[in-house]
Length: 324
Image (cartoon, rainbow, N blue to C red; front, side, top):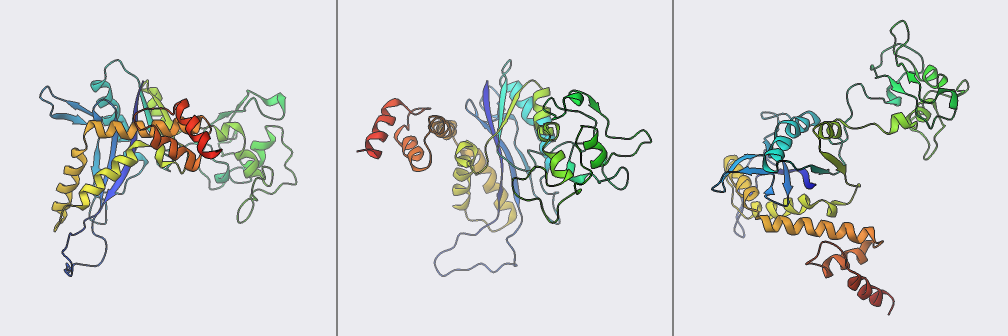
């Protein structure tokens, strides 16, 4: 299985000046260059190359969003990129292989289908103005065993969208004295404060698969999402840092200059550098796996620069430092 890391980044136009110089320009930060890219260990970027080494096809998607430019990046564009670029390019570059697409946590990555189950978008009573939601199967963890495994229609016989009260009562819950929704928000770590919170905690509402994961698995590949607030586990974050550092070294007077500088920086990162980024992420994963956190994990990663995992020797040295 070949891991493929993905992320988006933004570039803006900046000027490089001597001390005391200034460029007079309009207020604002200029136009955006939005890049959605995939990297992997074999070729560096996710590309298909010709025999002479030139790039024939790539998974990268670049847009220029703004009031007079492209629409801002969203889940629809990401799904289209994965479907028409990332998966076909991977399958051509690595025939017979299975990809493991790795994403961080974002609203675009976790977006659910239009008919997904969302308890807080359901009215208390049947009908009224509310979004249509798909039918479901009452989970095996339902408190009342009589209803486990049964199909639950989310529309009534007369074609109305079911409300919270009927949906819960059909699962065996007594909600006659329970309010529909808390205001302004539900109390922290309370799963039975209102009908919407109670329904949202049921397994069929919790364990829904995003559109991105569904697309990738239907194509025969795998998909995983990194935990929040752990950018060190995603090697493409190091790639963005490498690219942006070099992008900022180039003087740019016009937006066309900025675009050319961005593409040159994106294409310039060598394969061996991207492999080092990936190895560094693997070492962090290894450190966390054996129970290291914080400074201890960072120290072990620096100590094991030439390895993918944290060795027992490094652990012995760490123990000697922590417990002299």
